[in-house]
Image 1 (cartoon, rainbow, N blue to C red):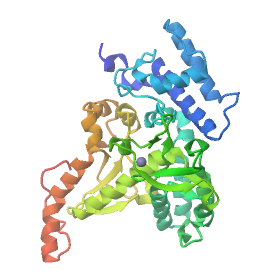
Image 2 (image 1 turned 90 degrees about the vertical axis):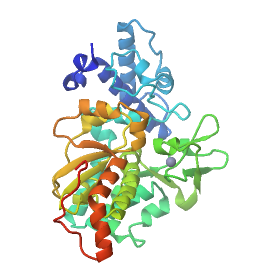
Image 3 (image 1 turned 135 degrees about the horizontal axis):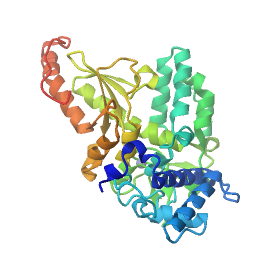
Image 4 (image 1 turned 60 degrees about the vertical axis):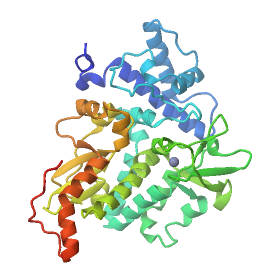
Length: 399
Ligand SMILES: [Zn+2]
């Protein structure tokens, strides 16, 4: 029986294996949050205990050997690929061989967070949404889009701040952040001790993405971003003494995963599209979507950059952004590398998305199409010094 017939996406969410996986992912995220505050004593968080109970029950029903403790469950999450857990899962629900915890650091993987936000009741706890909504509302009330932009750029460029920077930032030439001072203190938390090099008493940032590297059990360093790991060896960036500037604060994980990382990519993509002659606005409508791309014929595209490990979960999240500012088409952009490594990625996304949700294209396809549509006009205008001619008919392409 095909996976689609056995688990149609409509009732996929209620399948027992899905509920179990979601519960384990939520338990692992919660456990890591508690462990990162240094509180590792009993009682364990309810979510983690519930995940253990559900796993044991499922194992007993399936006559499989259950994990005997929460520590065993953590070991499973760090070593047993999710598609080999004793749970009935649709074959396309998880990327083959993927783990919920990183082996060498026991930190939740990107996939683990994606599962934790798949459930409505836990999404608000583990996603970036509530913080981004507060920031957007405050800046909107003060009619201050520059403040919202400064906030987004800070999250992208500075996932690490010293305590002194955090407390003086709004006053030190960044007045636009003044209304967001208390929010900044909520989202930049004292760095968990697990990131500290205990001998040197230092934290080390990744030279590529500037978030902190996590020490591994083998004495190495690990970057949480898949894109940095795809580039091979770890590149050590800035070192921070533990007491530097009154202590080191790290942006909380959901904002690193769902705002900083795509933001880096969105800024780069906006630059490429602008260089190719498109008119690009980042985070329009106080962040209603990632960027608004205007083409010479007046067509406006709403573009969001999405780099998710699971195409099924990404498809389940897919919905059009609010129409402010208005757009003609909306599209989600994924890295070409993700589709190259996972040939079934697009097909799985398509199976899980609703008919009204955004299209999925790669970054290369977007840049190539915009270049095709805008390039000749931009080039001609560069020579003539004229404004873009909106009367030009676009050539064939994705839009
Ligand atoms: Zn990195």
